[in-house]
Length: 607
Image (cartoon, rainbow, N blue to C red):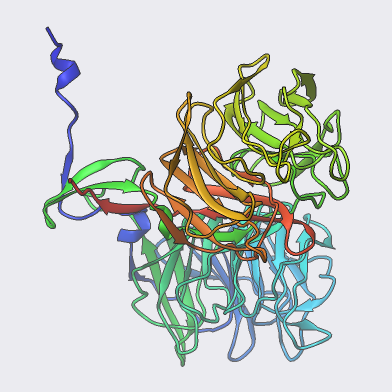
C-alpha cells in the first residue's frame, strides 16, 4: 500500500502577480528632509540613515552636511572648494578626491566625522565624469575627464588610505559615469560606453543599462551584484535601474527628475538622493525604499506557482534563448584546441597549441591561475569532468600526422598518467561528468580512412578504456557535453563540414535532428542529450553562431561577440551558463566569453 506522503505531491502557491526578481522591483522613492543648501554636481558618502554631501555649485562651495535619517545638519567645510568631485566611504570616514573649481583638481581630503584633512594628491587632475567606490582606506577611481587633455580616459587609480597608485584600466573610456561597490567587487557604468564589472583584478564588460544617459555619479550599491543607478541627462530624467549581477531592470522613477544625486555607499534597497540640478539647482532629497509588500515572493529558480490573474501555472526558470554572451577575463596563455572542463564558476583549461603546450589554468569565478602542467604537452585532445576531477585524452604531441593515446587525470592539483586509449587519435569528441567516466567518439586516427577520420568510440570506467558501439558516421572536430551515458555528438568534418548530430544512450549511437549550420571545431556546454548549447566553429570561415537544443529542436540564439574556431568550451552545469576560453579568431587568442541566461517567469504549457 502506498504511503500518503509519497503520493500527495507538493503545495503550489497562488499569486496574483508573478514574483519579482528582487525586492527593488517593488521599491519606491519618497521625499524626505531637504538639504540646507541647494547644490548640483556635489559628492556624497554614507547611507540613507547616515549620509554626507559636500561641495557643489553654483556658486562653487565647500559646504558639508550630515544626514541622520530625519534631518540635515551643517558641518565643517572642505578645505578646497569644488564640484564634480568624487566621493566614497562613510559619514564618519569619507573620502573626497578630484573635482573642478576653474581647473581640474588633484586634491584628496579625508573626513573624520568632524572636519576635513588634506591628504596626498591623485596622480592626475580629475573630475566626476567618472565612477568612484570603496572606503576611506581602500578606494578606486575610474577617470572620466582629466588634465592634461579634455577627452575621457580609461585610467583607474587605487587608494590605500595614504597614496594613490595606477590600477588596471577599464576596457572603454567612460563619461559622466556612476560607480558602486568595493575595491574587490565593484561596477562602473558610463553614458553609452558600456558597463564594466570589477573583481579586484580585472574589468569585464557586462550588460548595458536600458536607458543611455550621463549619470554624473547617480549610483549606489555594495558590490558588483547589487546596485542602483538613477537620474541623469539629457534630458533630465528620474529613471532608476537595478543591477543584480547579470542584468539591469527598470524600477520606480524618482519623483523629481534631476541630473545628479546619490548617497552611494549604502545597499541598493535604501538610499538617499540629495540635491542636484533639474535645472534649476535644488535641495530636494528623496529616499528609495525596497521593503517588500506583504505578498512579496522573491523568485527562486525552479519554483512553480499559479498566477490567479492570468489563470496559468508558471515556473521560474532561465530561458536560454534570452541569454547573451559577454567578454570575460582573458587566459594567461593564448591557446586553441586544448581541453576544457568545469563550469563558469570553476573551470579548468589545459594544453592546446600556441605552439603545443602543457600549460594548465584554473578559474575560480574571478581570475585565472596557472597550475601544474600536463605531463605530455599536446593539443587537439578531448576533455571532460570538473575543475577538480577531470580527464585529458588523446591529442597531438606535434604537427599532424602525429596522434597519441595518452590519458591524464586531474585531481585538483596535479596531472597523473592513467590508461591509454586503445586507438591513438586527435580532434575527437569527449564528454563526461567526472574523471571516472568518459565517452569519446570520432576523430582522426592513423589507421582510419578515407581522410583518416574514424567512427571509433571508447568508454572510460575510471581505470581503463573499452571500445564500444561506433558512430554511424565517422568524423573529426565534433563536440558534445553531458554524462558518459547520455550525450550528443554534434557537427564535425567528414568528408565536408557536417551538421550531423548523434545521440549516445550508454549503449549505441542514434542519428537525431541536424544542426541548423554545418561546422567543425565547435564548442559546447550542457547537462545531457536534452539540453545543449553549441557555439563557434568553422563553416568556413569562423562562425559566431550559437544554437540551443531543447531535446527536440535546434534554435539559433545570441551570437558570440567574436567569431571563433577551435575554442575550449566549458559548461557541464547546463545551458544557462557557458564559457568559451581561448580560440582561433582569426589568430590564436586568450580571449574569454561567458554566456548567461537571466531568470524569468514562464508559463507552463501542457500538451
